[in-house]
Length: 276
Ligand SMILES: [Ca+2]
Image: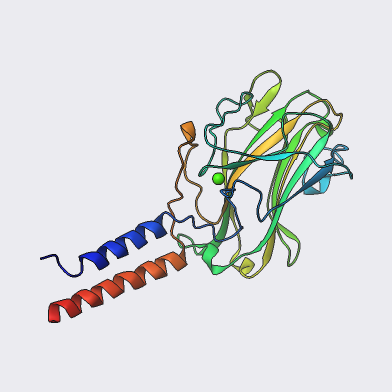
């Protein structure tokens, strides 16, 4: 005769497996673009008149004139980039966002999402909230003046006091940035994993994530950036050769609590079975 707890054990195991494979993207809706769409995000943009001032540039250097925004797309399994052969696509899961593209026209594409930092974003390893993601810029390098070059920009801003919690900026060919040579005049970075450590005081605060990808301001050269894996969980290592889906092996506090409850339930049930 089968042990009466076998079915319950299987159920618990199934639940535990489901939880373990559940992406713990506590912050940001559709942070991994697995909706195969920009659901939850605001995509906008305009025209790039060139960066303000001279290097080093920051978010304050960004200017966007009114006009039709640059393009945005989602790349799926099996995708490759002929201009940047070492970029593994998709980066996490089955879909990765591509902001702007290889076409020209001095276009800028912006991606934004506002969300609230919660206790679920705390990494138990250090007890403070994190925002993690991966990005890979692919920019043509026409060797214009720095303020006219294609560029990308990523920032996380605390909307409570407008402080910049994280910021990364690079224009094509920028000295000190380890760009790899792509085809023709294109340069790129393989996926860079970002781990932005937030102060504990950010809990309960609204933060705004912004990503910008711009063509050159003179109108003849393109630039774009791939982004993926926005959330508080670690971005899984490496790319995904051949487009094999890449699970996010993380379990948020809510998931851990639920799993603990299920295990306690089984322990109690087994104890009652033994007594019976
Ligand atoms: Ca993804």
